[in-house]
Amino acid sequence: MTFILDTLEGDQETVANRFSAYYRYLEEVRDKLPENAYSFATAPWHYDPRDSKCPHDSWLEEMRIFEPAEGERQEVRRIKIVIRLLGSYHDGFIELSYPDVNKYIIETPESDFASAHGDWIIDEIRLSEHGRVIHEVIFHRGTRLLIESNDVIYRWISQKDN
Amino acid sequence: MPGNASGGMDGVAVKPLTVGFHETQFLGKLNSENQAGFWFQLSDEEKEQAGSSWGPENPQALNRYSYVQNNPLRWVDPTGHQGTAPVDLGDGWYARVDKFNIGGQAYHEVHVYRMENGRLVEKGVFGAQGWINKHGGKDQSGPPSGMSRRTFDRLNAENIKAMRQQGTLPREYRHYRYLPEGQRPPWARPMRGPGMGGGGGYGYSGRMGGGLGGGGPKSYTQ
Image (cartoon, rainbow over all chains, first blue to last red; front, side, top):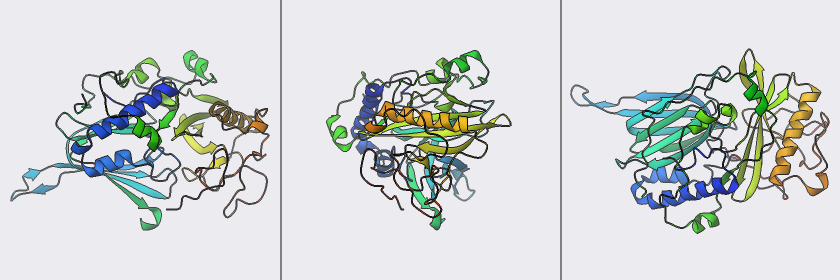
């Protein structure tokens, strides 16, 4: 079940209703969402393409998967994912960190004409049935990225600070 | 009830986006009038009015992949949230029109692509004020390299059409269908910034920010 990812052919009213339902949902689950994830989901710039911090139209620079390890034999391991995006105005980078991942899916359709993932189109945050945070993203090419983690941490890195 | 909106792609076959540009269906879709939806962001007031209940009537309960399965033409907008078909500008140029309604304020962007060696390459992002400084195109003015006047006219026409559909085209310019190459939109605000002040070509060194339909440009310095 998604909220705003698949608005399909929706007219203005339909799409508005979906955003409305999405924001209602976020309020419903606010107490169960980590503060970082909630703040990211509800940030005023999140769906404002005029703002540098908005991920819409950003380009994927890299997606790194780590296995931070502890223990005597490094046997206590987890999955951490960090995504770095070139901001749509090229004046900074967006870094998204998923500290403790228990599920991730990337699906990229083949394409005769797209060479990369293209623009980040839209994303949404949900709560999984396990009480974890789901972040699902769609790129221009049609790539779908879904990560279920304990949190989503957004960081804006200004070009001058990079 | 909320709380179990789990994701997952298990068992869902995503139809690859393999449609070619010469397929009849594709070409038939090109230049079709866009009457479809907009991407909305609710204003704070609207968010408050949205209430707190959320139930099974939620319209999100749609096949999450039907956008691909039903319409592989959505290469320009896989989510369909702008409901925009690809626009053929001619001579290997294409456009994607993103429309938004941000807290009640209409806004649009026209992403301009060129087919190069069988791959689509974005050449810039166009808007009501001319070129937008997205994707590193801040110093761009006039048509991109290699774009003919005819194609640039079509780009202008798409831009004006989007403005007309969103109600952002000033009343006194309703008769406009396109602008001749190099002509600045008469409704555009003065260009700012180094290298953007001269000539009559399209150019926009700033970022849209609350100026639609009136008011001055707003700077978005970080």
